[in-house]
Length: 323
Image (cartoon, rainbow, N blue to C red; front, side, top):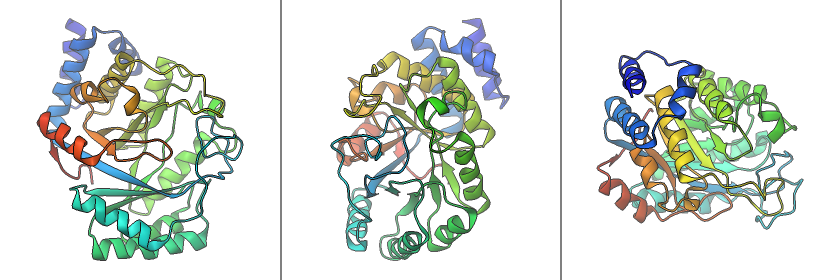
């Protein structure tokens, strides 16, 4: 346990741990590791808890072949298909979430990137949300360029979501229609346009522990402060439909090590949380301090009310973090 205490103190001094140290951490006794991660979370993030919700603004018929995704046109799944939702529906959901106490609302669309015409439509909708609802707006519109991101920033969006998904090494095993570097280029373009970035990955894609740590290190290098951690929900019809679901222990270990590597970040439990027996509660005592609530993109999520009760039970306060 001497090494765990040494590495905890190192992080508390704002010194970066190495890849080798992170690999050693992963094999530490579970409860001690998670307790140390939660100590780091309290030190850097206090009791702030960032809760956001998602609207699936455009669904299905995606040109990309990401092996986990129900919306890819390469696979036959039961996911709904529809074009861009109309303005009133997106506004209605924004108002509903704001009334429930949610402070961040994310609009997500399928496809490699939103075309210019639809970017302009979304800018009009974002302006209306900011004017009439006031909720903070995050967008996930694919691999846009700096000019498109700048338009969204001017319209009132504050954050862009773009997951790296996995490590650079493992990425070609997951997707071949775009690259890891395409992702990084889009993230850097969003940052250059003045937007903060939300980026993380999915656990259970056949990756190794080293891949998970490499993902966290890539996020650290990009200075990402909002990090979704998804648990693969194997969707029938996708190439990963028979992938084993990670255990609660593996999730807790990964969350804890991510906290050591990304001490100031909002570590956000996202898709797949419902596959865990405790719906992720133990992860919120292991370094995680943010969540995506409500329905996910193609699978059912959790009610905002139940998540608000959980936040209160654990002693957190809902607030916008790492703006």
